[in-house]
Length: 265
Image 1 (cartoon, rainbow, N blue to C red):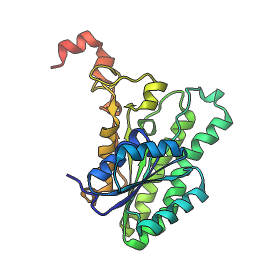
Image 2: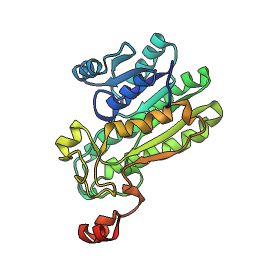
Image 3: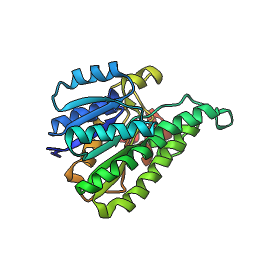
Image 4: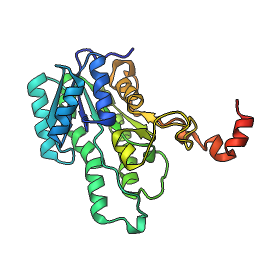
């Protein structure tokens, strides 16, 4: 079991979904977590669900550099250190062809999904360098590993975050600051249930080779591994948690349900 004993971790967008699941795992593994978000009511609800004295909420706009500076200063003042940063906050975009994507949508998505992690990394790096190391986990997407149509702004941000992760990992390795990315596939959260109609359970997502969507807890497991000392020699990695989606074409998508059922055990 990985352990985060005595580690302080910031998780942006920690009020629900993957961020909240990651916060639960951090606490379970002995760490202290600061979840952030714009919505204070959502933050208060998340704290109630976490039910731990080792959890706190900080109102924060991930797209704002001053908001990052205020957050980091507050966490250092309260806890004295920052051992982990999970850049999880992000916006999804409505499906739109490249030629009709609006400039406003483009700017908004990149401000939160790419510039936000950039500002966050720049702000925490001096703290981590001074204390002798740390771990940064950037939550990208399978849309940052393969091309998905109708996602131009989202894809640009998630591919950009993947590249930023690689560069940071190389630059910071000698400082013992590890930087990795996690690439979730379709994941069941309250937001995706509403926006994409995702349903939990085996067989409810045949597009994935495993035939189902992920739970938020399954994505959180990869995040917490990368935060922990169990991943002490892992940096610059990209971990796809997607049920095999980016491995290739699902046998059932290629062959059809009936033929795949005959040929596969």
